[in-house]
Image 1 (cartoon, helix red, strand yellow):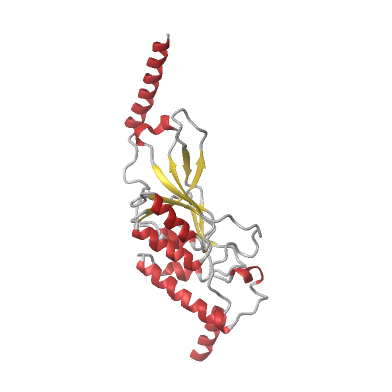
Image 2 (cartoon, one colour):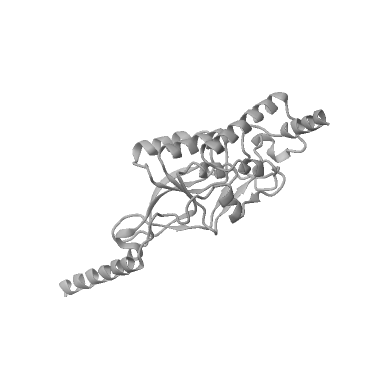
Length: 266
């Protein structure tokens, strides 16, 4: 019986491979854009005044170039302790693990959100809004673990599924898999397990992901699962929220300055 169970487990794992599929087989074949990193400043300025938040948006698929792009961004900017906002379909397993470790080195906060650019304002600074209605799919969940502080808004979705050979993900059931692929995926599952523990996540995250094959819809983690798997470690994104009185004062000051300027012209 033990020999039979081991053989069945090996056969099931033989269908896996070294890269996370960007999408399950039933989804669109359109290739997603690679992940980009950009500084963003909260707006409109009249709403937050001197207390406008800043963050780094990380939007797009995780590719072999993602870690290099992140390191170049880090070299050009002081990102230590910054907030990284993820909105990603997933991507390469090994690149995701390398990115997560780089994020941890910079002691960053990670969250899930969608950044939208706002129209230019009088001060000339580009502004953006941050919506919690975004997805962090597949290997993005493991990048989320890289943050020293982690926040998942109730409106956001963290979705997981098995890692799979990208070239075979669209015909996963009909494809054949070699012994080399079986060996490679077992190594990568070990790397995922080690990384998850290293980042302080719950090993059940990996177990949950490996229960969902790519021809089925991804599993959306519940709020309870997000907490239990330690994908979220804090109850709010920013350490202190903007006091309403301060925001109101900033708006009033802006209106006063505008009125004074108008009187000066009169």
